Length: 340
Image: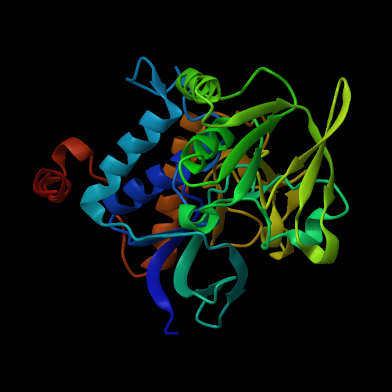
């Protein structure tokens, strides 16, 4: 596969990564965003999509979901390519000082600079901690739903109490032979509308809800037959063909930890004059960046990305001197925004 050539590779499609793509376009850099998750928004969307955010400049209040939608609209004039569901695996600097970056799916990038905006690192599913789960993963134990049709006419058990668990339970009940939601308590960390919809579906007999925790799986010959759920009154065996575990995501620095960067406590140390890491040409912004008096705020990440990209410009175009232009007087930017 031929390498994709661009000025900057942005690792992470959360709010800071998306704003970085806008800033790259403003100063005349091309970029490509890569994220291991299958949708944009990063930890904001995965962990608190409907939580109100109050400290975004000039926006009194908005949810994480609304913020991501606005950022996507902001970068639309620049036609930024975004590769989702791909985790960046390796980086190698060549003799010409550019970087060759490869993902776990084999996609290769040829870039002048790398901007890591990966939040707390790559997010991976929180896995079910019972002995039988690993052998069944990808067969009858799932940590995501790729196609609803795969669960048609099956007895499905969904485990979890967040937005993802309730949303998928409500979707799967319409295709599954039988759908049971299992959560460790009666309270949920999901949108009120989703909780209400789930309760209505239970009352209507469209799905079941059981309070408890998964204790073990009955899977002779690696074929799931039932799930044992532990609760205050003992245990109950629930018949199931498919188990969808949606316990949320956990942060994992992943391959970035092997990139020979100065990493301390799971954070990348940076120079605050330009947010460059210990390896020139690799920058870190947002929650993954660390420096004295670091504030884990989205607005801080916006500032960091802006300065980092202005330094990255020198790597992409060493022969050019970038002239600062306020956006109010940037005719090219105005034309792009108007024509988008």
